[in-house]
Image 1 (cartoon, one colour):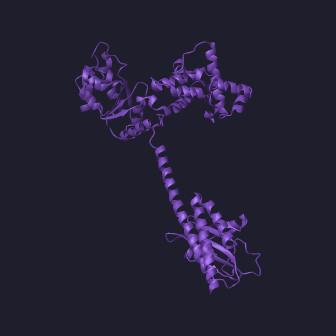
Image 2 (tube, one colour):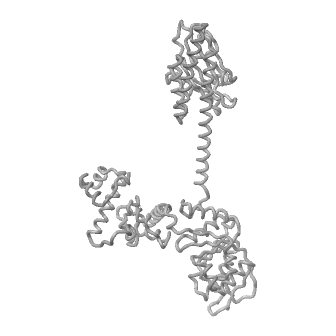
Image 3 (tube, helix red, strand yellow):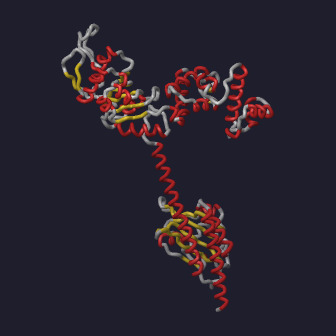
Length: 512
């Protein structure tokens, strides 16, 4: 009796050590599949378990297959596929109860699909299989093979394996929650990336995302929109995006540049005129508001309207009606108004340059377009799009934009905003002879922005130094910072490459 107690005690101590090691393996690995195999190795080495397997149930296919195994070849593992209820493993999956087979060679329910026991003769080989469960639902099994003398008590094995199975189940549960959280985050990220983006506006910066959200919110309504922003930021594109994503998309979008029309004709342009209304009015003519009936009118540079025209525009906004110049008939229109300006309307109101009541009628839903200097992350996207556009228009192939050119584009302050960037890229596309937009092809205004803290240099040597530096940086970019590779591209020795990199204080690691 004392020997039996001592044996049980030693076994318990050993099992505790094994459980500790299994816990350590599970804690140290984020990949459950990689963790299971070491666990089975520990079971085999420490507890004399010859073969061991972990199977998992695929809920979609209703098939049980071996996830990890010790003592089985790859071919034998691939054979281990079961349906719920099939064989011993299938029975455990279906019932959720452990099964002990004292001698597999004498049990007809033991299928030995893996064919791993076919060579066993004259020895008793026990098979013990326990369920792996999460919240009462069987997700797989843990099973082991063990030789025995026919008198062994397998209750210790069942108890111990159930503990190990529970540890594996908890690890599966935790990792599934982590994976579900990752999947939710990916889905959320995907939704954020696939948020409404007008097809005619390029930009992924936070500033532009805010603009896109405003466009999406206002497009479905009939609200008057006032687009604010510096010249060249793309205010007209916002008007187009709102119109073509609105219920009025199939109806006209009429554009009027209020600053481009003389004061003497702006009223006629907006509201039309009757025959004989003035000297050159030889026939009646519809104005822009009539032409836009049912659709949208875009009034660009609204801050340049004269006080008299502002009064008449206010009436259209309030009453949706007007009279043609020289006419007495009141015309009704259904027009959505989108206005834009780069002028400080609030300041103009204090000086009488812009009517306060008109301002509040226009400023129902303001959209502020950020200047390009506040959306630096969009510069390369825009540059690529413009390069592609003007390459097609001029039948040229543009392969890439060089690193020095990119640095110049990013560092420049862009007072002319997107319009200025487009002009710069068009110029560079026309000038390039090798399909690459180099820094020296950009306008002089950008060249001076390359390093504002350095002294101004002129002359042939300065130009040659600038070109040499650009070629060095371009080669390092292509070779991902590899000096030897860059030297081969430039057809110079590594020594010369090193001297020139040192001369221009270039950091190759920057390009790796």
